[in-house]
Length: 371
Image (cartoon, rainbow, N blue to C red):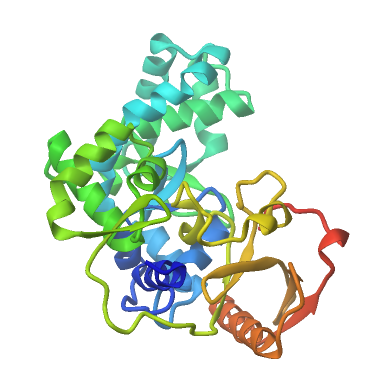
């Protein structure tokens, strides 16, 4: 399988090059889960994959609970569809709790403390309340639970993992929590095997071509569980060997080959990058340290013809978006034009009238994930 085919297929299957959905809940369900600790970045990740979508559209979907933000898969926030929240949490929570165990012990969080927290938060939120973290922290303190910053974060993550709370709507820029059973309609429980099969199908359909190792990384499952999920659905997939690895994907269409020349301003933690353990198809080895000295490639990056060609930052004015472009190498006139078009799409998404590009030298800036 030529490298370009991998990139073209991923761009299509992730709905970057060919948007088919118009509702945030549709693309979130298609992708399975969307990493979302950077909420503004996650909204743009969805916006690029939807037809005629705005930041306001996604914010509204979040407010009314069409999409939910919680800890699931790897131990970080993700956006999920409400109907997927319970079975996905049930499938992955034990693994996340195991990973978080050291932090729990460090902050003296044990079964007794969590039990007090669960009862207190249940009582505090019941009746359809959606409360900010300060309100919940105050209730916990009254119940005798210490809530310094890191301790509170881990308390609330555990409450998400046991299926007690999830995101409510925002108050200004502040997030709230709500009770899952009051925020999300009841859903039919799934067996572990059923859940593994559905998660595998979502992943390889929306992220393929991808390897078993990629799926294990994205899902946070053990390799054994990831393999079991793949075994259940591989009769619906095809596989190709490339550079010693086996890639799984749905049957490709005939119109995904060749260079499109389109550019994408991807936010940090975008699924096009973060959902693969092996990111060598997406970025040249010599460019990895330039994209992110940590080697994780979790900065804002821009992509042309499927390849990461540099990083970017944004500056929002009253009616104008300024995008600072930091390329790895000189860009062609066509590439610059594609980036101008990408900045225009981002400005439109944000509801701003105009956009401009500013080109910076790579060595003159610090590589930090943007907002």
